[in-house]
Image 1 (cartoon, rainbow, N blue to C red):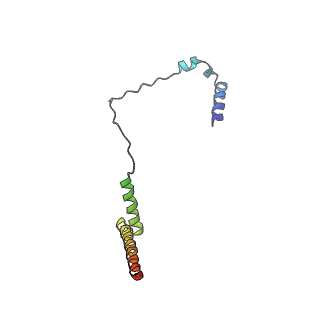
Image 2: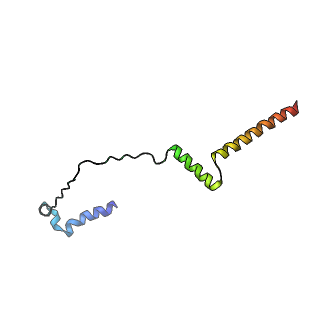
Image 3: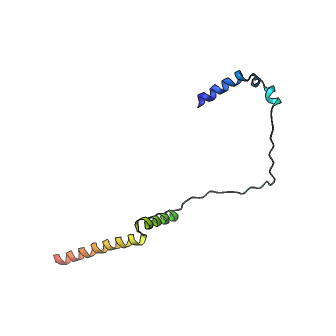
Length: 97
């Protein structure tokens, strides 16, 4: 890319000899003035796109939609296995004694 730009800058004066001096540029210069009707602008600030709560709720919603899984279901499964483990140990202790 840089080589093609350098080649272009070298070929411009050869193909257009009027670009070599500043008189051509001074005679053909256009100045554009831009004026705004109102000089006040609205200030815009960007915030985060997704917060932690939004991300967690979107993941939970997609899991509920696609897999039939919810946070309550996950808690129930953890509760079931922890209680089962607790009662299995308690029954094992009774058998040993």
